[in-house]
Amino acid sequence: MPKLKYLNICAGALGITAALIGGTIIIKGASGASVKSLIAGSCLMLGGIGIASTSLYQVKVESDIDKILSERRKAMPKTCRGCRNFHGIKYGGVMLVCAIHPGGVEGEYCPDFEKFG
Image (cartoon, rainbow, N blue to C red; front, side):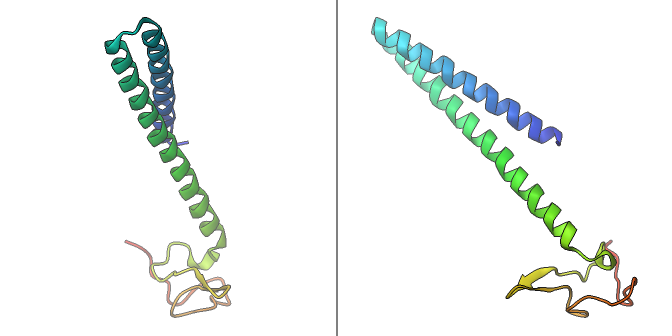
């Protein structure tokens, strides 16, 4: 798991903690009728919810992207790995490998292979 994902999970946990503390302040402030406590608790709770939801949503998006990329790598023919001509998108259930070889190449090597970079 990349470091950024760990940081997003930690930020999400901190956001949840802030929301819980803010909720506690609101409850205690409501019983004592302190307006400052209610405002402070509300701000902390809403801020915490915002941080938590944003961070944890980012983790979900990154996981979805990793899954899609992994599936796409598995579907890529060995001869096409690293080739700038690879397309690899399905149209009507049939994958277009590339414009030069729509169905892929027969052998182990592609005569039209062009490396990235």
